[in-house]
Length: 335
Image (cartoon, rainbow, N blue to C red; front, side, top):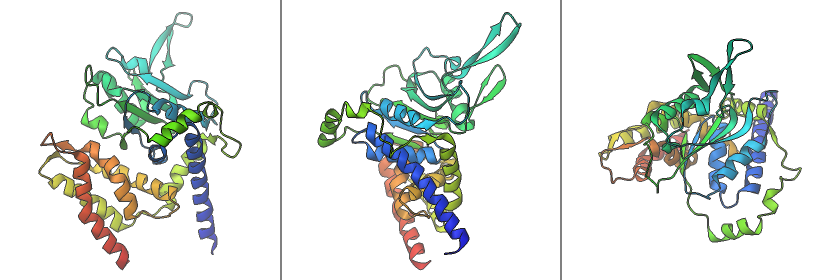
């Protein structure tokens, strides 16, 4: 094995190790959610954000808090927290999340006091309960990793990761999320009730889960996740056939008679690092059709606007996968 290949494998192994350590820490605290944990970490390593459709008591706060607590801050900054939870309400103001300029009478100057958005991991609870004005502030933060207050922009950390929730069963007092904001979420995940055995395990390990994981699962430095993101982009291969498959999936969705507005080109761009992150998590240096089939419903379904309200967006996406995946399979066999 030559030098570059050895270096490449070592670098990839380092990124996989970071993924596995985080996965182990989350599985220690949250039982019966292994599939959700993997998707959340894929989004984190792809530098995306996650929207969870859930119900109270499903484990979302524990999941987000454990993720935040697993990160070691290697940049001395006491104004950036590892984890912050923001409860979205109809009377919330943009300044309640971004921060506010405060007048100092002693110096006769204004200073900026950072809001809870300045954190590595932010849990936005019931994000569809707040006004469009606040949602616009969140949109800027998620899209550009910055907030603007009094015409001055303040940068968020490179790590910045949002887990937002909405409860589909309670529509009173909610505001529909704008299409532009939905498009900023890499994944939309529905959290169903866990199975019987997992629920028993939650009760059995109640005290055990309050303790931190053992020494075999040390916390992760912030810089390790940032480096892993770069390694995934550099070391995991996306073949021309995979890129063509993504475009063909988008065209199939747009051509569906039940669809009023199809998925954006931006969603295809965002899909590539997510597919690379999943390939890395599965120990591969290339994207396969399995990655596309597994992630496509989570990446594309929430971006589809329906012409027929009763249609199912997940079913539309899965139907659109058939021909492009078959073409990808043929292209892979002939490669």
